[in-house]
Image (cartoon, rainbow, N blue to C red; front, side, top):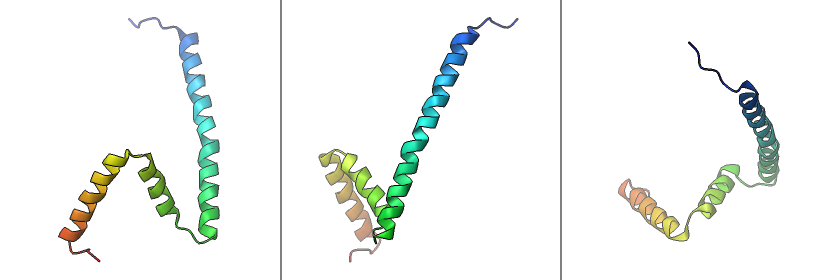
Length: 80
């Protein structure tokens, strides 16, 4: 036998989630337009995204990640 559920409460959660999904579309479109504008002026969007991700990192973790990455680059002969 199926358990009774509070369908109104469930519907409320579903609708709220749907609204949040819709709200995410606006900023995502804005980011896409911003990167298109940056590209049109000669900047590479992939590097902008990489810079943003790097700026989010803790400075100490960023230093360790960069040192490790440079070690890996040298190990495969990419030490320009």
